[in-house]
Image 1: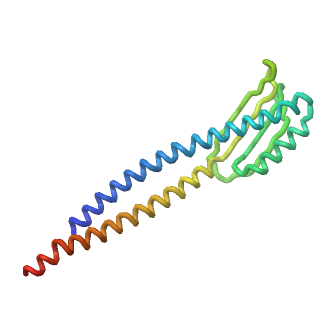
Image 2 (image 1 turned 90 degrees about the vertical axis):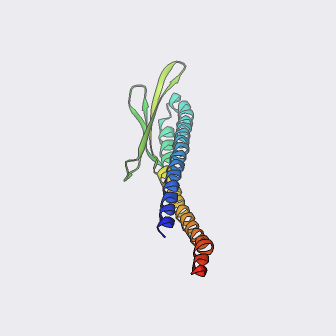
Image 3 (image 1 turned 120 degrees about the vertical axis):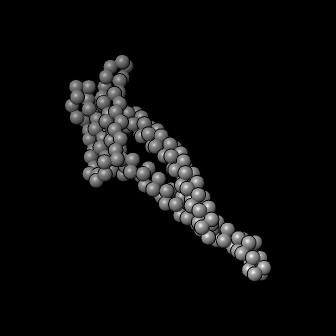
Length: 168
């Protein structure tokens, strides 16, 4: 009995080490994907904003930023500033958590500073995906250890305990 428990504890520790490695690898994939996606969003905001700003259609930029912010639930704050640091457009959302990342970009047109963009996004969706992944790993590990323990118990009972009982 003690040998089986010790073996299962050792096996559990091995699974914990593997799970930590897998969680680290998953975070290493998810967070850079979030960063790349956010940079692409910044590129899209920049691409759309250049023409209206050059044409002095600031209400178009403000409406775009408002709609973009409302549609994208991970956006906490977007601000566009003119070359003279005047606020052109903004969108803000109240977020309870502090898991945010700030992205900034200075936009130039024909070598001249045109506007600055500041985008603040929450990476809470990435954390939630990771939590789901962790829960799945923990459940699978528990099932594997339990199944392995049952198999080990029955095989030891069949191969070692029953022959000893027959001898006695």
